[in-house]
Length: 124
Image 1 (cartoon, rainbow, N blue to C red):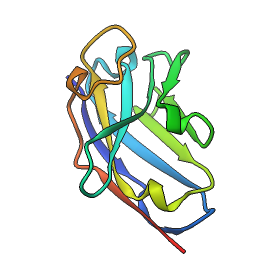
Image 2 (tube, rainbow, N blue to C red):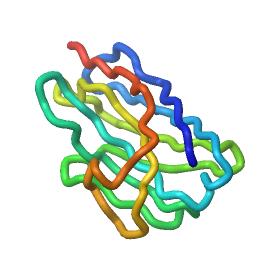
Image 3 (cartoon, one colour):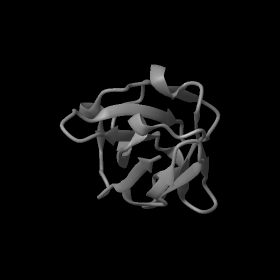
């Protein structure tokens, strides 16, 4: 079973870039699809992106296709989320989680081992 700890969030300005990290533990990490979600105040948790265990396959939520990039380094047991040109609407807590299904899913219910999240706040 994979356990995760997110980091890299903070207070940034509109137009900045940021890279979030998700440090994972567990023997199955390199064979586990990992995903990023975000939750803004008063809103439901939303799918951002996911990456297959090998890193060879990625998929994104519609809003994330232009400015977000997910990647992973299995030698470091870490998954990354690069965000470019940050906007006010990107303000949220960003969570990392491990997929429990073997197909491409963007459903919160198909992920487990959630971390505590990392806060991203975008200001002017």
